[in-house]
Image 1: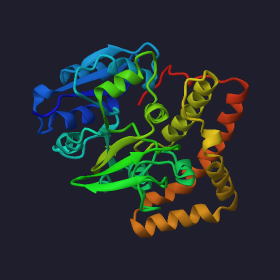
Image 2: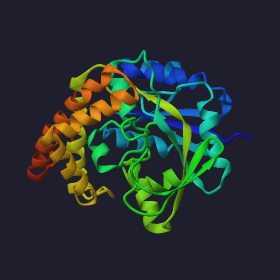
Image 3: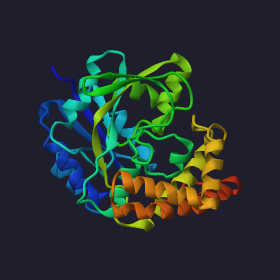
Image 4: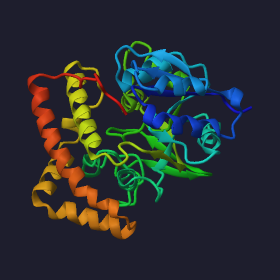
Length: 338
Protein backbone atom coordinates (compact mmCIF):
# COMPACT_ATOMS: atom_id res chain seq x y z
CA UNK A 1 0.00 0.00 0.00
CA UNK A 2 1.44 3.40 -0.93
CA UNK A 3 1.76 5.86 1.97
CA UNK A 4 -0.73 8.69 2.27
CA UNK A 5 0.52 12.21 1.56
CA UNK A 6 -0.52 15.54 3.04
CA UNK A 7 0.49 18.40 0.72
CA UNK A 8 1.08 21.62 2.65
CA UNK A 9 1.03 24.94 0.77
CA UNK A 10 1.31 28.38 2.43
CA UNK A 11 -0.48 31.15 0.53
CA UNK A 12 -1.03 34.89 0.61
CA UNK A 13 -2.54 36.34 -2.55
CA UNK A 14 -1.06 33.53 -4.61
CA UNK A 15 -3.73 33.46 -7.29
CA UNK A 16 -1.27 34.18 -10.10
CA UNK A 17 0.60 30.90 -9.53
CA UNK A 18 -1.62 28.58 -7.49
CA UNK A 19 -3.68 27.14 -10.36
CA UNK A 20 -0.62 25.63 -12.10
CA UNK A 21 0.63 24.23 -8.80
CA UNK A 22 -2.65 22.52 -7.92
CA UNK A 23 -3.20 21.24 -11.45
CA UNK A 24 0.21 19.54 -11.43
CA UNK A 25 -0.76 17.84 -8.17
CA UNK A 26 -4.18 16.79 -9.48
CA UNK A 27 -2.73 14.90 -12.49
CA UNK A 28 -0.38 12.73 -10.44
CA UNK A 29 -0.65 8.99 -11.09
CA UNK A 30 -1.01 8.32 -7.39
CA UNK A 31 -4.13 7.08 -5.58
CA UNK A 32 -6.38 10.13 -5.12
CA UNK A 33 -7.64 8.76 -1.81
CA UNK A 34 -4.08 8.87 -0.50
CA UNK A 35 -3.57 12.61 -1.09
CA UNK A 36 -4.93 15.56 0.86
CA UNK A 37 -4.03 19.21 0.21
CA UNK A 38 -3.95 21.78 2.99
CA UNK A 39 -3.41 25.50 2.53
CA UNK A 40 -2.26 27.79 5.33
CA UNK A 41 -3.69 31.07 4.05
CA UNK A 42 -2.62 34.44 5.42
CA UNK A 43 -5.82 36.28 4.47
CA UNK A 44 -5.80 36.32 0.68
CA UNK A 45 -8.02 38.90 -0.98
CA UNK A 46 -7.45 37.82 -4.60
CA UNK A 47 -8.74 34.60 -6.21
CA UNK A 48 -6.46 32.29 -4.17
CA UNK A 49 -9.28 30.81 -2.10
CA UNK A 50 -11.67 30.28 -5.03
CA UNK A 51 -8.92 28.44 -6.91
CA UNK A 52 -8.19 26.32 -3.85
CA UNK A 53 -11.84 25.38 -3.38
CA UNK A 54 -12.06 24.29 -7.03
CA UNK A 55 -9.46 21.63 -6.27
CA UNK A 56 -11.05 20.50 -3.02
CA UNK A 57 -8.34 21.97 -0.83
CA UNK A 58 -8.71 22.31 2.95
CA UNK A 59 -8.13 25.95 3.89
CA UNK A 60 -6.64 26.80 7.30
CA UNK A 61 -6.37 30.37 8.61
CA UNK A 62 -2.82 31.67 9.09
CA UNK A 63 -3.13 34.74 11.30
CA UNK A 64 0.61 35.48 11.31
CA UNK A 65 0.54 35.69 7.48
CA UNK A 66 4.13 34.55 6.78
CA UNK A 67 5.04 31.48 4.74
CA UNK A 68 6.70 29.85 7.74
CA UNK A 69 3.63 30.31 9.93
CA UNK A 70 1.38 29.10 7.10
CA UNK A 71 3.36 25.87 6.91
CA UNK A 72 3.18 25.45 10.69
CA UNK A 73 -0.62 25.76 10.98
CA UNK A 74 -1.20 23.39 8.06
CA UNK A 75 1.36 20.79 9.20
CA UNK A 76 -0.38 20.56 12.57
CA UNK A 77 -3.59 19.55 10.75
CA UNK A 78 -1.97 17.01 8.41
CA UNK A 79 -3.24 13.41 8.49
CA UNK A 80 -0.97 11.71 5.93
CA UNK A 81 1.90 9.34 6.61
CA UNK A 82 4.11 11.82 4.77
CA UNK A 83 3.97 15.62 4.51
CA UNK A 84 5.03 17.32 1.28
CA UNK A 85 6.07 20.97 1.61
CA UNK A 86 5.18 22.45 -1.75
CA UNK A 87 5.07 26.21 -2.29
CA UNK A 88 2.37 27.91 -4.34
CA UNK A 89 4.96 28.82 -7.01
CA UNK A 90 6.07 25.20 -7.43
CA UNK A 91 4.93 22.98 -10.32
CA UNK A 92 5.44 19.22 -10.27
CA UNK A 93 7.30 18.48 -13.54
CA UNK A 94 5.62 15.15 -14.42
CA UNK A 95 2.74 12.89 -13.39
CA UNK A 96 4.93 10.32 -11.57
CA UNK A 97 6.61 12.84 -9.25
CA UNK A 98 4.85 11.59 -6.10
CA UNK A 99 5.73 7.97 -6.90
CA UNK A 100 9.41 8.87 -7.46
CA UNK A 101 9.62 10.96 -4.32
CA UNK A 102 7.92 8.38 -2.09
CA UNK A 103 10.09 5.43 -3.13
CA UNK A 104 13.03 6.24 -0.79
CA UNK A 105 10.76 5.88 2.25
CA UNK A 106 10.88 2.11 1.78
CA UNK A 107 14.18 2.55 3.61
CA UNK A 108 13.12 3.13 7.22
CA UNK A 109 16.24 5.20 7.91
CA UNK A 110 15.22 7.89 5.43
CA UNK A 111 13.36 10.75 7.14
CA UNK A 112 12.87 12.97 4.07
CA UNK A 113 13.22 13.06 0.31
CA UNK A 114 14.00 16.11 -1.82
CA UNK A 115 14.49 16.73 -5.58
CA UNK A 116 18.14 17.05 -6.57
CA UNK A 117 17.49 19.92 -8.98
CA UNK A 118 15.16 22.65 -10.15
CA UNK A 119 13.60 21.64 -13.45
CA UNK A 120 14.86 23.68 -16.41
CA UNK A 121 12.41 24.42 -19.20
CA UNK A 122 13.32 26.54 -22.23
CA UNK A 123 9.78 27.91 -22.38
CA UNK A 124 9.93 29.41 -18.87
CA UNK A 125 10.50 33.15 -18.24
CA UNK A 126 14.17 34.12 -18.19
CA UNK A 127 14.38 34.64 -14.41
CA UNK A 128 12.79 31.24 -13.76
CA UNK A 129 15.39 29.75 -16.09
CA UNK A 130 18.23 31.63 -14.39
CA UNK A 131 17.41 30.43 -10.89
CA UNK A 132 16.87 26.84 -12.06
CA UNK A 133 20.28 26.91 -13.74
CA UNK A 134 21.92 28.53 -10.72
CA UNK A 135 20.34 25.86 -8.49
CA UNK A 136 19.33 28.28 -5.75
CA UNK A 137 17.17 31.35 -5.16
CA UNK A 138 19.85 33.40 -3.40
CA UNK A 139 23.23 33.84 -5.14
CA UNK A 140 25.06 34.32 -1.83
CA UNK A 141 24.53 30.58 -1.20
CA UNK A 142 26.87 29.89 -4.12
CA UNK A 143 29.72 31.59 -2.26
CA UNK A 144 29.08 30.01 1.13
CA UNK A 145 28.56 26.60 -0.52
CA UNK A 146 25.28 26.12 1.30
CA UNK A 147 22.71 25.15 -1.33
CA UNK A 148 20.74 21.98 -2.07
CA UNK A 149 19.99 21.78 -5.81
CA UNK A 150 22.24 21.07 -8.79
CA UNK A 151 24.06 24.17 -10.04
CA UNK A 152 25.52 24.40 -13.53
CA UNK A 153 28.27 26.67 -12.20
CA UNK A 154 29.67 24.06 -9.79
CA UNK A 155 28.06 20.93 -11.32
CA UNK A 156 27.22 19.82 -7.77
CA UNK A 157 24.05 19.84 -5.65
CA UNK A 158 25.97 21.20 -2.65
CA UNK A 159 29.53 22.17 -1.73
CA UNK A 160 29.18 20.72 1.76
CA UNK A 161 30.74 17.28 2.26
CA UNK A 162 28.70 14.34 3.53
CA UNK A 163 28.64 10.58 2.99
CA UNK A 164 26.66 9.80 -0.18
CA UNK A 165 25.54 6.35 -1.37
CA UNK A 166 23.86 5.94 -4.76
CA UNK A 167 20.63 3.96 -4.70
CA UNK A 168 18.00 3.17 -7.31
CA UNK A 169 16.56 6.55 -8.25
CA UNK A 170 18.17 8.59 -5.48
CA UNK A 171 21.25 9.32 -3.38
CA UNK A 172 21.19 8.38 0.29
CA UNK A 173 22.96 11.14 2.21
CA UNK A 174 24.08 11.06 5.84
CA UNK A 175 23.98 14.47 7.50
CA UNK A 176 26.12 14.21 10.62
CA UNK A 177 27.64 17.62 11.19
CA UNK A 178 26.96 21.33 10.82
CA UNK A 179 26.52 23.28 8.64
CA UNK A 180 24.03 21.43 6.46
CA UNK A 181 22.54 22.27 3.03
CA UNK A 182 19.42 24.43 2.87
CA UNK A 183 17.14 21.39 2.75
CA UNK A 184 13.41 21.54 3.46
CA UNK A 185 11.47 23.64 0.94
CA UNK A 186 10.20 23.51 -2.65
CA UNK A 187 9.02 19.93 -2.83
CA UNK A 188 10.61 18.32 0.21
CA UNK A 189 8.68 15.38 1.69
CA UNK A 190 9.03 14.52 5.40
CA UNK A 191 7.77 11.70 7.56
CA UNK A 192 4.80 13.15 9.42
CA UNK A 193 6.04 12.46 12.95
CA UNK A 194 9.31 14.30 12.28
CA UNK A 195 7.61 17.43 10.99
CA UNK A 196 4.76 17.58 13.49
CA UNK A 197 7.18 17.19 16.37
CA UNK A 198 9.18 20.12 14.99
CA UNK A 199 6.19 22.50 15.08
CA UNK A 200 4.41 21.14 18.15
CA UNK A 201 5.23 24.16 20.31
CA UNK A 202 5.97 26.70 17.60
CA UNK A 203 4.05 29.15 15.43
CA UNK A 204 6.66 28.90 12.68
CA UNK A 205 8.22 26.16 10.58
CA UNK A 206 11.73 27.08 9.40
CA UNK A 207 12.75 24.39 6.91
CA UNK A 208 16.47 24.02 7.58
CA UNK A 209 16.06 24.33 11.36
CA UNK A 210 14.21 21.01 11.50
CA UNK A 211 17.26 19.01 10.47
CA UNK A 212 19.59 21.05 12.66
CA UNK A 213 17.48 20.20 15.70
CA UNK A 214 17.57 16.50 14.84
CA UNK A 215 21.33 16.49 14.27
CA UNK A 216 21.80 18.20 17.62
CA UNK A 217 19.97 15.37 19.39
CA UNK A 218 20.41 12.29 17.17
CA UNK A 219 23.79 13.15 15.59
CA UNK A 220 22.99 11.51 12.24
CA UNK A 221 20.18 12.12 9.76
CA UNK A 222 19.56 10.02 6.63
CA UNK A 223 17.93 11.81 3.70
CA UNK A 224 17.29 11.07 0.02
CA UNK A 225 18.20 13.36 -2.87
CA UNK A 226 15.91 12.04 -5.60
CA UNK A 227 16.90 12.12 -9.27
CA UNK A 228 14.02 14.38 -10.23
CA UNK A 229 13.31 18.08 -10.28
CA UNK A 230 10.64 20.60 -9.41
CA UNK A 231 9.70 23.78 -11.23
CA UNK A 232 10.07 26.91 -9.12
CA UNK A 233 8.64 29.95 -10.87
CA UNK A 234 9.86 32.12 -7.95
CA UNK A 235 9.78 35.59 -9.55
CA UNK A 236 9.05 34.69 -13.20
CA UNK A 237 10.18 37.76 -15.20
CA UNK A 238 9.85 40.39 -12.48
CA UNK A 239 13.25 41.49 -11.15
CA UNK A 240 11.51 43.85 -8.71
CA UNK A 241 9.85 40.85 -7.10
CA UNK A 242 13.29 39.29 -6.60
CA UNK A 243 14.56 42.47 -4.92
CA UNK A 244 11.47 42.56 -2.70
CA UNK A 245 11.86 38.92 -1.71
CA UNK A 246 15.54 39.42 -0.87
CA UNK A 247 14.65 42.32 1.43
CA UNK A 248 11.87 40.28 3.01
CA UNK A 249 14.29 37.40 3.58
CA UNK A 250 16.82 39.67 5.31
CA UNK A 251 14.22 41.49 7.41
CA UNK A 252 12.64 38.25 8.59
CA UNK A 253 16.03 36.70 9.32
CA UNK A 254 17.06 39.68 11.47
CA UNK A 255 13.71 39.68 13.29
CA UNK A 256 13.75 35.98 14.17
CA UNK A 257 17.42 36.08 15.11
CA UNK A 258 16.63 38.88 17.57
CA UNK A 259 13.73 36.80 18.93
CA UNK A 260 16.06 33.75 19.14
CA UNK A 261 13.61 31.69 17.08
CA UNK A 262 16.22 30.25 14.71
CA UNK A 263 18.73 27.41 14.87
CA UNK A 264 20.86 28.80 12.03
CA UNK A 265 23.40 31.50 12.84
CA UNK A 266 24.31 32.63 9.36
CA UNK A 267 26.86 35.22 10.43
CA UNK A 268 29.05 32.90 12.50
CA UNK A 269 28.53 29.72 10.46
CA UNK A 270 29.19 31.18 7.02
CA UNK A 271 31.29 34.31 7.57
CA UNK A 272 34.17 33.11 5.32
CA UNK A 273 31.71 32.58 2.47
CA UNK A 274 30.01 35.92 3.11
CA UNK A 275 33.38 37.69 2.97
CA UNK A 276 34.16 35.79 -0.24
CA UNK A 277 30.89 37.07 -1.71
CA UNK A 278 31.68 40.68 -0.77
CA UNK A 279 35.24 40.43 -2.12
CA UNK A 280 34.04 38.81 -5.37
CA UNK A 281 31.59 41.64 -5.92
CA UNK A 282 34.32 44.20 -5.24
CA UNK A 283 36.70 42.54 -7.72
CA UNK A 284 33.95 42.11 -10.37
CA UNK A 285 35.89 39.47 -12.35
CA UNK A 286 34.83 36.47 -10.19
CA UNK A 287 31.16 37.34 -10.84
CA UNK A 288 31.78 37.64 -14.58
CA UNK A 289 33.75 34.38 -14.56
CA UNK A 290 30.83 32.53 -12.91
CA UNK A 291 28.49 33.98 -15.53
CA UNK A 292 30.67 32.68 -18.34
CA UNK A 293 31.13 29.25 -16.72
CA UNK A 294 27.37 28.88 -16.35
CA UNK A 295 26.76 29.97 -19.94
CA UNK A 296 29.30 27.57 -21.45
CA UNK A 297 27.96 24.64 -19.43
CA UNK A 298 24.31 25.45 -20.21
CA UNK A 299 23.97 28.18 -22.85
CA UNK A 300 21.11 30.55 -22.05
CA UNK A 301 20.90 34.33 -22.12
CA UNK A 302 19.29 34.15 -18.66
CA UNK A 303 22.83 33.96 -17.22
CA UNK A 304 23.14 37.70 -17.90
CA UNK A 305 21.05 38.24 -14.78
CA UNK A 306 23.77 36.72 -12.56
CA UNK A 307 25.73 39.98 -11.99
CA UNK A 308 22.47 41.84 -11.32
CA UNK A 309 21.40 39.18 -8.81
CA UNK A 310 24.75 39.34 -7.01
CA UNK A 311 25.10 43.11 -6.77
CA UNK A 312 21.46 43.73 -5.84
CA UNK A 313 21.74 41.07 -3.14
CA UNK A 314 24.88 42.73 -1.77
CA UNK A 315 23.19 46.14 -1.53
CA UNK A 316 19.92 44.81 -0.11
CA UNK A 317 21.64 42.61 2.46
CA UNK A 318 23.92 45.40 3.69
CA UNK A 319 20.88 47.63 4.10
CA UNK A 320 18.84 44.86 5.75
CA UNK A 321 21.70 43.88 8.07
CA UNK A 322 22.13 47.46 9.32
CA UNK A 323 18.39 47.90 9.73
CA UNK A 324 18.18 44.58 11.56
CA UNK A 325 20.81 45.69 14.07
CA UNK A 326 18.96 48.93 14.79
CA UNK A 327 15.28 47.97 14.57
CA UNK A 328 14.62 44.31 13.67
CA UNK A 329 11.14 43.75 12.23
CA UNK A 330 9.39 41.30 9.95
CA UNK A 331 8.56 42.57 6.49
CA UNK A 332 5.06 44.01 6.28
CA UNK A 333 2.68 41.61 4.48
CA UNK A 334 0.05 44.28 3.78
CA UNK A 335 -0.71 44.24 0.04
CA UNK A 336 1.71 41.34 -0.41
CA UNK A 337 1.07 39.12 -3.40
CA UNK A 338 2.90 36.26 -5.07
